[in-house]
Length: 225
Image (tube, rainbow, N blue to C red):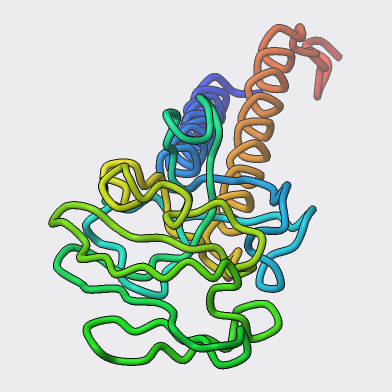
């Protein structure tokens, strides 16, 4: 291989390899800082999410979540350290959440600021199931959360003496999303980066091998007749 050509190939190998490594590093950092991957290990959010379901949560600031969002949050003083809890946001700062005065569970309903919630996601259509009425005005900077399986969820209702069961928005680790497109694209980008890095390595090794191979000299025409 000619020296000029070898240098060009080597430069290309370095460029491709570095591009691949940068793509891998960027994708992994983005995946780690942009998403939380978890698995459901309880039935407090059934039937929406059941035991064994894999979930993806996009990292957001707690003050970005809205009523109806399903979030992951940590509350070590309630559930222990290192535990992510998944529940649905019912009220945010300033909201008044009221439940439930119906004589039977089938007619229970939660109201937020006087508006009845239409909750098609709750298990068996039961809005509360605990027969413990509550009337909570959510403090600013905090959120009120419930599980979708109301009769079997240890949620904000279980801690009425701790800020009326609300948790600070800073406790939110991520908002659960139903689409895996983002993480999948990052996975594809990581794989592409690995392939580019491997290609760069192969080009670099091949070029070095060819440069070290002794040039074959062949006489095209005899010097003397």
